Length: 393
Image (tube, rainbow, N blue to C red; front, side, top):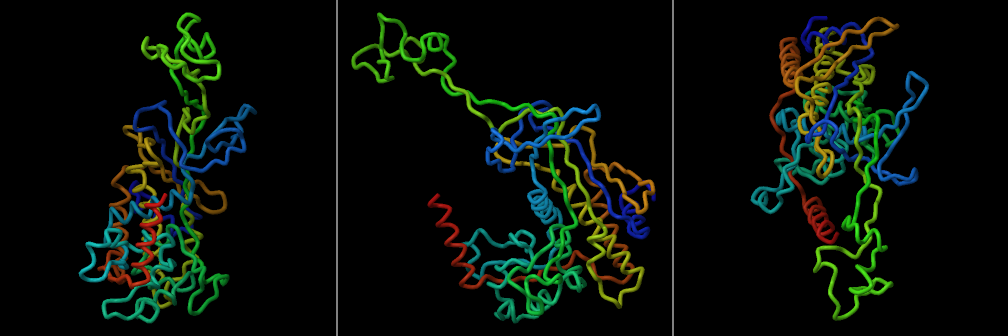
């Protein structure tokens, strides 16, 4: 299969592999062993401020783990990272009307940055360059005729939809929302997990030995400055005058944890990608070249997301020095897979190689020009309402 990522993925596609596994070690930006905080919501039902689960160990014991970033959030990061690295990858972009761009800094938005990607209802609140409403435009009709049953137009214009998929929950022109052709499945699933988790607690109040010994409401009987109710006695000397406190310290559950190891792991399913039906007039060689492009694109997005993992305030993760992403093929029928560790730039080079090979085979490049769509009055009003809601919080 060769020692380059493009060769590995191309061979895996041609040989009908199930997909590839992805894994890479991570560490806090502050250094190994420093606290991290999950970006996954916890309802506290297990008595802690962070989500936990147990993993069985080889010796029969269990290990406490915490999911730091969910599969859904990981896909969102992957899409955004890919758009940042390859601005020309998606040809659809929503902008403010001419002359109003300065008033709407929220725009332009690449279609992959919209909450529901190509299925986002905001696209229906746009017009094309000629002022034709999106649903009536040539672009809108081509998009709404697309889906897993007809992926040719999406391959050329929005191939990144293969990362997170899309669901036209409001229905398309040809299919109701529950029809299989109204949903494109996601081919990427990765999560970031902390292993061997030790919970942290957060203290409040000064750790003052005088306060601890007296219960938190007096210095001594001669300089009593608060009543036992905690209320200050007017005219008396305050404990702060002497550099001590009169509030007993408390300990609270914290969302921060310390972990033995942190890793991102997951998969890219080639079987899901194969369900995306490409034009029948494409030859077998063109079909294989296109599927190699899609597989490489999804793997590239997962790597791009590792360059700047800012999970939430104060919690940033990075690859350890000298570490890379391990990509391992998963053949069918229990055959041995092939593993390759790739550096940060290898997937981007592989994607450009895959696209060049597809162009050589007679296919359109996935790095096409932009098709501008312009927000109509309804979308501009929705943006303004969003601003107001954010300001009221």
